[in-house]
Length: 191
Length: 199
Ligand SMILES: [Fe+2]
Image 1 (cartoon, each protein chain N blue to C red):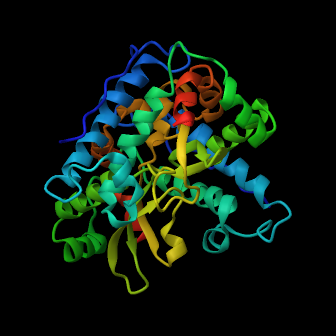
Image 2 (image 1 turned 90 degrees about the horizontal axis):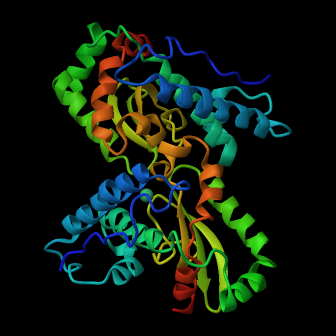
């Protein structure tokens, strides 16, 4: 069995002007693709040769973990982006966010801070623990909350490759635009 | 006295076509400037204020993470700008070449090992040529760490470093880090590397 690159669930230019087609061509077509290719090459002849993604994320180390988790993280990131996003959560997710963070704006503020202050390459996440409690976490490089037993609900890629062509050093501007294409419907489905 | 962003000794476009002017302008004027400002903010009013950057880095494990990240970013970029130049020796010479040959077998072997360190650093970081005693070794560090830090795996005096944060190459090379590292060798100022090696 080998992993394949999932197609983007939208046209390459669908997220303009917030995330450019050029950024997505590299981000999906080169970076995400390279993680898939590297993972498939690295697992050959190892105990992970036929492992599923969850096993790789929870048990693997080194290059197999890095590439495996990056395959998962990017699939997870692209899946929640849309040209016609639900711009606010509703129902139980909305209630959970408000009970944990006070308001949607307060949640976004805390999430933005996590995204902007993650030093170097990494990710900001909204996660749910086994008891159903929500929290915001940061991971560096390929770090993935699945490894720590969390259920990820929402993520923002803050590797520079996610925004450098569009925003250069202005990570806060990228995070602000990220919200304009982030589909809460997908997050609700995960919740 | 606060740390200052040092000016480049060459124009932003001087390293074209290997490193483009737009990258240089943002890398120096935005990224390096931010590390410098954030370092000053992190140490202002503390007993760290007034120490040299080398003193701070040598005891970095006692410092808050903001000093580690921004102090490293301040020092590393100073080194990076200085070890590049449009002019200067294009190949190592003299004592430095002799020690490179002794340490790695040949210049070509050194270049391959340094390139490998730069390409296999996952995420953001640096690859280094490090003086240890009378010899040279290669290492890489994550994020803005460097070999002067007491917590570095490989400690010593950095004499050459290549920035492999994506901001160092993404506008021109995007995902092609190998092309950037290969291009970097065209603008290394080996006179400055030799000066640092001599100490
Ligand atoms: Fe840099």
